[in-house]
Length: 112
Length: 112
Image (spheres, rainbow over the protein chains, first blue to last red):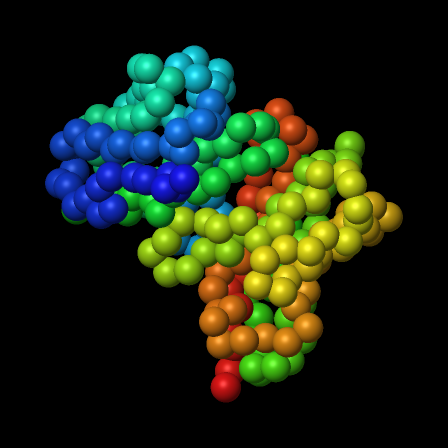
């Protein structure tokens, strides 16, 4: 069990560019979650996958955001045409049940 | 839907003193409740969780929390603070339907 991993750990991008983040969950976990955390706040739910199916999306997930989990293993979160307001820590979590979530170290995005 | 309120965005204690971090939840049904700890530039680590079994839950690093339905509270305590406990602590609640909601967090400072 190597835990949840995320790549990259830090990303600096210019406004208007596209960025993609990757999350590798714990191998036997079928549930995968994405959260966004801004400074001084708790994580906010973005989206949830069970295996490869995206079952829930938050209103926070605008049209510029898309998430995939093509083979039910790793997941990617893409942000198109980034805005300064997208600067945040993006956290991934995985689990085997709805009340079990193990978090990765996060990807810190800075949009300049 | 769950909502979580953490009373006190900053708590400061002396090393060896009691730690008390407060959390209240708003829910029409008893939720699942969690405490997570976050160190700088890292993801969230689960300290403990309440899933409708014993109301007093023991977690890692000497922390425990008590579920009090009458007070809709799930306060986190530790009898004796250690310097390594300095971190951000998040309370979270879920109905079990992949709807975990986090409080805004409490930053714990431990003075020598």
